[in-house]
Amino acid sequence: MGAALCLFGADGSGKTSIARRVAAYLRGRGLRVSVAWVRGSHTLASLLARMLSRASAFRGACNPYYRICIPPAMRRLWVFIEFASVLPVVLARFAAPRLLGRVVVAERCPLDFLVWLVVTLRDTSVVGSFYGRSTISLSRLLCSRILYVRAGVEALLSRRRGSGEEQLIPLELRVYDRLAEALGAPRIDTTGRSVDESFSEALEVLGLSGEQ
Image (cartoon, rainbow, N blue to C red; front, side, top):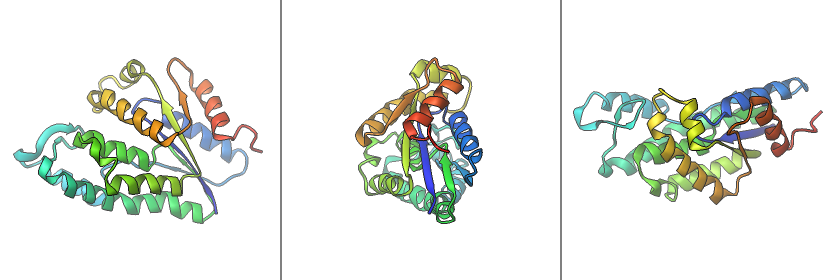
C-alpha cells in the first residue's frame, strides 16, 4: 500500500510549486510518485455546468469558470451531482495509485473540492452536510498526511491578479482558515517566502526531511 501527501489551500498559496518539488524530491529517493489534482467541477457536473451556462436563468459570477450561479432551490441537488461526479475521479487519482504502491502527492485534494462547493454556491452549510462530512472523511481515509498551505490575502491577490478566481480569494481564504482550524491540520505560511523556503518547511512538517 502506498501513501498520499495531500496539500490544500487557496488559489495562489503555492501548493503547485511545493507539490512538484516534493514529488521530485521523493522520486530522487527512488519512490514511485503520482501527482494528483482534484477540485471541481468534474465529469457530469462539468458537462451540466456548461449546459446551464447557456441558460440566462443560471448565468452569473458565482462560478467564474462556467459563469453560472446555482439557485438556492437547486443547491442540495447540485451538491449531490458534484459529489457523485468527483467520487470516481478521487478514487482513480488517490485510491488506485495507493493500491499500486505509489506515493500520491496531491497539489489539491478532496478538501479543495469541498471549499470549491462552499465558495461557488456561497453556502457554508455545505461543510456540515452529509456530502461535506463525507468529503472530509474521504480525505482523512485517503490522505496519509495533510498540509494546509496558506498565504495572506494580499499575497494571494498579488499572485493571482487578473485571474478568473481573483474575486473569490478573500472568501476562499476565510473558508480554508476555518476548515483547517476545525480539522487541526498542520500548516505553513508562504507569505513573503521563497519557493525553496516553503519547500523546506513543507518537508519538515510532512515528516519527510529525513527520508532516504
